Image 1 (cartoon, one colour):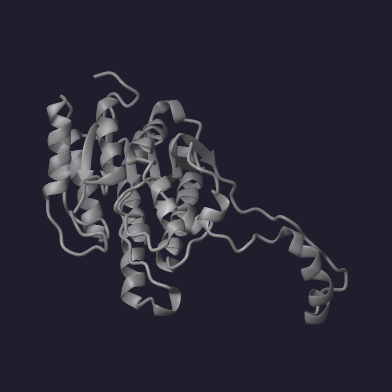
Image 2 (cartoon, one colour):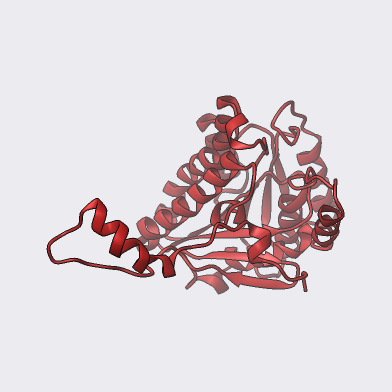
Length: 304
């Protein structure tokens, strides 16, 4: 089979629905053998069923592709390890990992419970680490491999009521950067994608006001299928010089995000006191402050 991913084996977490499903389907169309991981849980992480993962496998096989369903949770080390081991056992190798699995438990910060914090961190951040760590020895041994991790503007910029999700997603950006640095010597790449797409992950956004209704209408224009081509490219050999970056996809737009770097500095030969910081340092540094914005403030134009 020809295509950008011909001959490759790709594991995609959270691939039973939404963005992950479209990534799995496109990877197969581009020639990859695909492992479809999904526990079939609710949006908040409860329950589970094999149906979503198995349905995607059937779709891939009906078009002549090869796929395997994996339905264990990657939020535990054993489940993540089994994903990679079953991939190797079935297809003999692993070339790419897409860390897409996630849940939501949105609450305003002062009402967020420890279990809401821990559940979201466990699936998004710890799950991304567990799967990546399980794949890393194989990538190192073969001298190649690509990670694509899913971050979010909730972490990169900010959103209301998502402290758990934002912390996990910004943590993933740091994880990806560290993997890129640590494994570049072995020919391994690691990048992040921040998606804008209508899926059940954002289907719970309230529509109580005309403004909220208008925002949701814009989001519904951005389908998960729009995200998949960038992911396929990042997994392919054509992206062998792309690593450590954070990209965004918003309908037909592709962005590369800046990453934190010093914006302004002040110095004082004799050092600083609390008073001199108030009088000199903060007034001088304020021109470099980042406004207290949410994602919608930064991406204020209609999707194109």
